[in-house]
Length: 112
Image 1 (tube, one colour):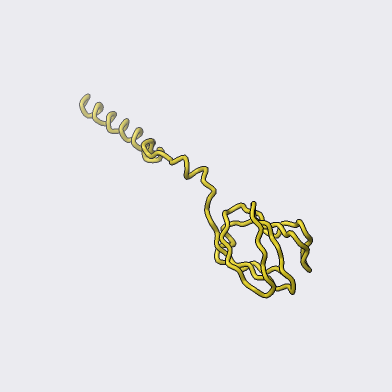
Image 2: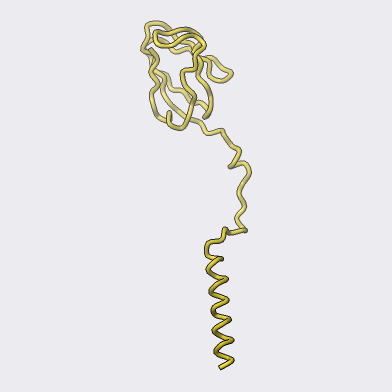
């Protein structure tokens, strides 16, 4: 009788301890640091100038000029701001046209 009680107690204790281990996070999987702090994803999209005059835009540290009636393919890093350098019919000079995000990937940005 004592042997059965002892075995039943051991099985019950093992069952209690193993149920918590099922939901535990594995401790042996390291997370790479560069994956958490990297923000260098590049986004490729098209900018189309539908106005009658060239539009100059500052993207980060560089300036781009978009010819009237033309589409231009652009590849920029996520988080880069496109700031208008000259006024258009729907925006003022110095206004932020867009901030590059992953939603712009393979999209067309139309400037009027």
